[in-house]
Length: 49
Image (cartoon, rainbow, N blue to C red):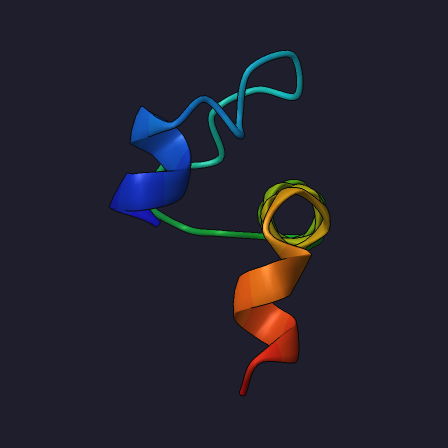
């Protein structure tokens, strides 16, 4: 998660790790979107497994 955050994958969609401390469905979608964006950008890493 830190790597996704540092590389800007949460830019424009918000920070899911706000002050509440709990992650709900909305935050889960934000995390999923960031992970999918990472996978699209680095498909060569995912595909080689």
